[in-house]
Image (cartoon, rainbow, N blue to C red; front, side, top):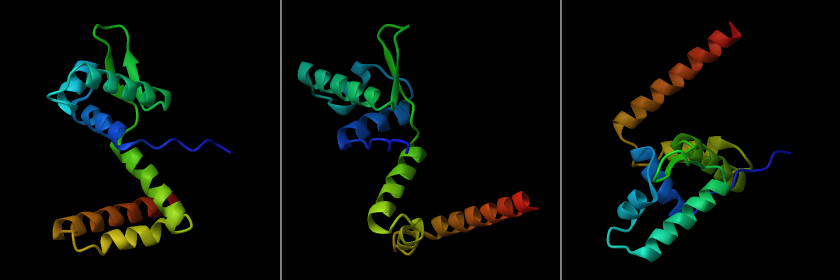
Length: 133
């Protein structure tokens, strides 16, 4: 059975979000963004977070440049999917349907969001018909 990918902590997620927004970054750039008034201890914290993310295979480190550049290897959508599936496994016996139904029924879903979801479902239906066809 394949090993379940490790989840990320909130601090690691903050690092990944910076990478998703900015692309490849240095330790200093991350430290300046995450801890604007930080010093050497915050720099060390960011280094430790990068080490942990590297062990989880969520980032890569380019050692061919100085300072080294770090970049996410996991996309935002992939991590969202993993977290949603984990939640479905824990709360819904693995089924995404109850989870998605609850999200869609949320009052926070705007008319634009509902139209977008309808379009996505229509597109998925078309793709399913083509693959059967």
